[in-house]
Length: 254
Length: 254
DNA sequence: CGGTTAATTGAATGTAGTCAATGGTTGTGG
DNA sequence: CCACAACCATTGACTACATTCAATTAACCG
Image (cartoon, each protein chain N blue to C red):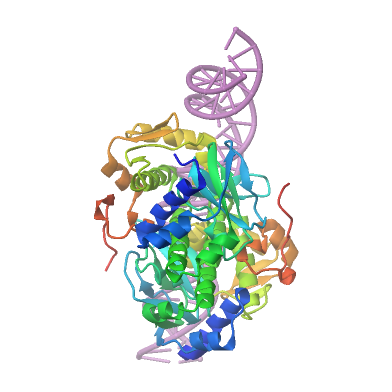
């Protein structure tokens, strides 16, 4: 668990390198970016919708959610950010955010000034890596939207469990069939667009399918069965040709 | 209506300039990118989910939708692309798409090779402009997800009408209270995550609120009322400080 | 051990989906 | 100019999924 800014930035570099090869010099440049460490408790709002920022927020430990708020105060979480992920690289090119960030669990954050990040993009490879990171984010967002729009409760939750499993695993944060997901049922409900009551019932149904979420841990008995139930195809995670990632990689209709 | 590649690229430049000032030389560089014109009929699938590409697709006229497909064939449209918008700038840094593109109306497209686009990003300002464009896209996507997750049919459709109105207006494609939206009800339903039957009922309800969608035209009698019904706040469109854009710009909770 | 937060369950309601049929429009060819 | 076909829009009746309200049980923390 990262506790210093360079450690956290090293995690971020690991993530970038998944999709963009970087030289040691480029890695160092990112690792040595200035960062202010901040520990926040669960349910803490890091940034509110509509606020401006001059820094980006990197997760060092814990879990952060990007959300939007309705007039009546209900929230929709549209993205989860794991340790090593930069929640709002977006805000480097566009410092106004339409959305908010909240710490779902107690988290350690590293705030990196936009100015420093923008300076790092002198290097076109670093700029490309950042751009790619944003694209990845958008790809997950699009899938999230599709699930919210067209899937029922059970496959929707199942899909989220698949996604988080693969993401955790490829970052070394657990196995895809068993990992920590430090959120309450109410927060999960905000993510999948259900009420907490209905989410609870959905979890009960999933439990009968060998998928348990309890004690903030996800445990999946039969991965293949779950991916099928969820219609999970990991292409959208943009993890390149690492076929090992699993899920059914059926090809598109001719 | 753009019919040559440079004309279409000029529209794209107009869009970039909304958020990133460019010199004449930079504009020229983009306008003179190579592009292959292609006319496609309505309902034509331009690219299918999971396909690779080595070119990006710029809309010259018509309307294009980005969609994801479920196992049973149902679609969720997650983004609309207007003339002057590049549907998959994303695919420049990441040539695998998890999603598909379809022409919703008969459309003219310009295919620009990734190689040429990537070359243009030598210029860090152009790279920034592209990055910003991607971020904008992601911002709309996040809002779309939030609406799908947390709004009921009427405000959901209302929100889409508001969004499209503002986008049309700021690109000179109509007024926000009256514009062409060349889609069928079934396509609209795919966008808002409803069945076409229920969408039809929702449109009927909206008609009683002075919001008409018929003959592929949207006509809004009372803009302020609609933005309120939709909980529409245009910040997420990232149109900078052009306060004139309308909607209720209430600030975030303290 | 008491207080608080989170999870679970039941019953009633409501919104959206499904199935099936009817109108309406548009475009084409006789 | 009319007849027909194809597609799109509209409506009704019924079903199903998810929400709401309310209460209870379980887990966690000081």
